[in-house]
Image (tube, one colour):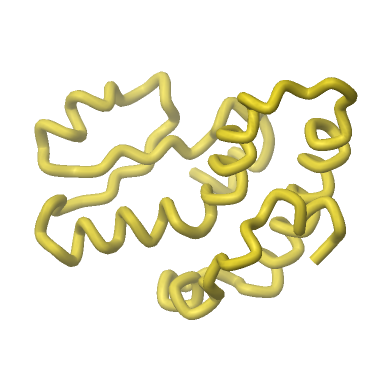
Length: 120
């Protein structure tokens, strides 16, 4: 874990590798992705001078996208609170439709225009 990534990730965060493995993810590639994202996030955002403390919420969101948020969705599905987890490009499927169908909406692009072929 890079120094910048450790600034984003919570020190008490559990190890999510078993969850990711259960989802069929390539753990080595995912670890590389998280390392790169953590480093980029640290260099672009955490290093900003006079960064408002109110942006700490965004640090939490960024550190939780691949871990706690996924666990939250899987827990809701397991508990029967949601029957489906539906990933879509945000402009194509309104969240209200997914929620009305008993699902949990997940945006796949995060506004980024790269790796679309992998998502599709």
